[in-house]
Length: 447
Image 1 (tube, helix red, strand yellow):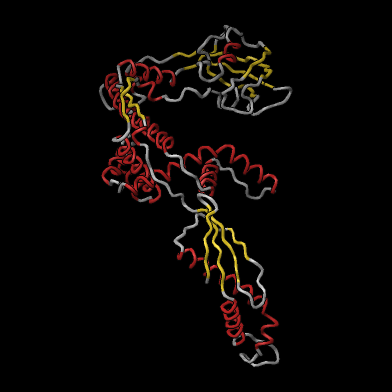
Image 2: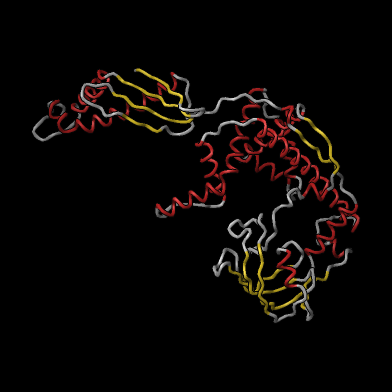
């Protein structure tokens, strides 16, 4: 067997395998002889059918089966010989097999990229420094009061903070768009549920009023198909409700899992939970910066096979399936998947390769004590923490995912010792809401 390897680029390899004609002929002959001992044919005793007749009847079948088996076994041997590990099924291109000639084929595939990590000293990380203040606890209690508000219908013009019930319909250039309409839709005018310009149009209206207006979506709007475009909206206001917030007293506290201490006990429980969230928020803020830094200083080629696998994984989480649909629809769905998930898939694949390489090269192994500690923290907010811990321990996939997260944390710790680390004063609110660039929108509409 002759084997040659061609490097097409950083990731692609083409292996060409040539098997001697004698080996192919012998394999075919041996298989025909073996078949002749078993085949049954009228007019001949079992095992006595002439080889020539067997060849005439089954020659093409035997030839196909023999060549297929030789291809599989020889490719496996060639990959082992050349120390190659394809990331996905190779693209096989066999040459026509003529009588008395060698059997030759090529297999093209991607391999893992080879790279060295560097640039850790150029990674800049800001560690947020913050604490939970009494004002933070006050704001949390106010949020809880808002969540338990009692809404009462009123007969007056709309004010900020009201809950309104509206019909609305919008068109862009006379055409509908996703999330453009709703009937009897309840919206709280809290400055978060609607675009500011839309909310401003509702302020001062009275029940029964209908209005029309133009609204231009921001250029960075999350619904890309309408970003930067102007829509014409029709809105009818059906009703207005104002919020009545409960007093913070023993009755209010009774609605929470606070065993003792009354209002003070509630505040203490909230503080402890917020401090736990703050620690996790700081950890994640640092981790995001380290991961982004690793990507910035280590540009590596990404195997298309891994990226496509990750795209499919992300799409499956949204249940984007193509079973039972036409080829045209399937192609459009695949294009949509690529547009929606390509960037995130590439980021995940790159980080996976970088973390694996760093852990292997530096001998970083999962710290099982940290796994247990992380598991205890995850389980602590639940009523039965022991049951949560037991579930993880009895669910291998979940435990493996947790161990992978711990390994990531250990890699982050390793990088932090070499990166340029500074501290930055921050607040609980800033750390818990790191991304303020995404425009808010109602649950069932675009606006």
